[in-house]
Length: 268
Image 1 (cartoon, rainbow, N blue to C red):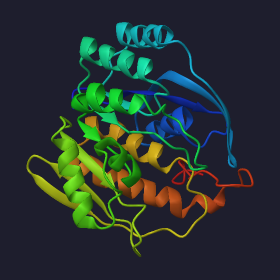
Image 2: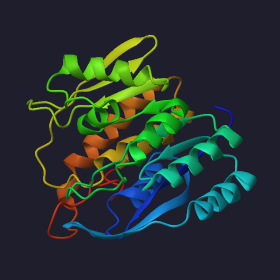
Image 3: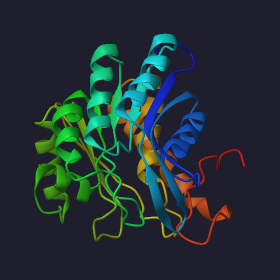
Image 4: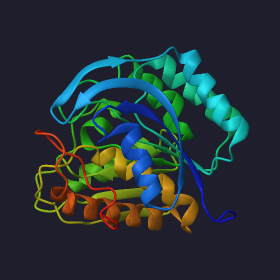
C-alpha cells in the first residue's frame, strides 16, 4: 500500500435513521482505518421500521458531486450502494470510466430490509450492463443475484457458486455471493475469482438488529482492499468485522424495529 491511510468513497443513498447507506458506510470506513468521502445518490426518509419516502437528485448533480471529489481527493477505493434509477447508474459508470479508481466494490442494492424498492425496475439492466463490468468485487445477496441473472433464487451453495460464476462472466473481477438468505444453520458466503472459489463460513448470529448488514460488508471490503494483499483476505476480514458488529448489536438501543449493527463495537 502506497499511503498509510486510504481514502475511500461511498456512492450511495442516505439513511436518516443512520443504520444503512452512506451513514453505515462512513462508520465502517472509520472503524477500519480509512478516511471516508461520500456522493449521495438519494435521500430516504427512513427509520428502523421502514422507508417512508425517497428523493433522488438529478443525475447531473450526482455527476457534480463525483467530479468535485475526484478532482481534489486521491481515492483509493470506491463502494457503490443504492443508485435509485438508471440515469444515476449511468452517471456513476461514466465517472468511474473517467477517473479509473483502483478498486470498485459494487453492492447491488435493490430492496430494503423493510421490503421497500430502492432501485427502479428498469434500472436493473443499467446496473448489470454499465456497472457490473467495472466492479472489482460484486457483493449481491441471493435475491439480487437472481434478479441480475433473471433466474430463480439460489436454494443451496452449489447454486450460489454457479450464479456467482455467471455474474463474474458479465465482467466483474470477483463476486462475493452472500448466503444470508439460505435456510441453513450457518451463514456461508462464496468468493468467486478467476483463480477459483473460496467458502467464507461463519455463524448465523441470532439477533434482530441486522439493518445495514449488506452496506456494512461491502464498505468494509472497500476500506480493506487498499490495506490487504488480495481480495480474499480483504473479504475474509470484512466478514469477520461484520460478524462481530452483529454479535454486539444488542448493546445499541436504536429504534423499535430492525436496529443497526454496532460498527464501533471495538471502542464503545
